[in-house]
Image (cartoon, rainbow, N blue to C red):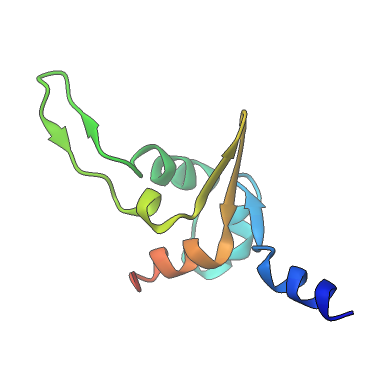
Length: 85
C-alpha cells in the first residue's frame, strides 16, 4: 500500500499544450501563447549567428517531449509563470 502512495507522489501533474490554458483561467493564456513560450524556451540563434537567450522555461524542466507529443508539467510551469524560479 505504501508503495502505491509513493508512486502517486512522484507522478507529475501533466497537461497537453491545448489543455494548459484551462489550468490557469485568470492568467489569460491562450494555446498560441503557450506555444510561443515553448518555442522561446531554449537559447537559439538569429540569422547572423547571434545568440538569443531563452525565457527559462526549458531550464525549469516543465517541458516533456515524447515523440511528437509535448506535455507540460503544470506545477513547474506555474512556478516559472509566477517567476518563482
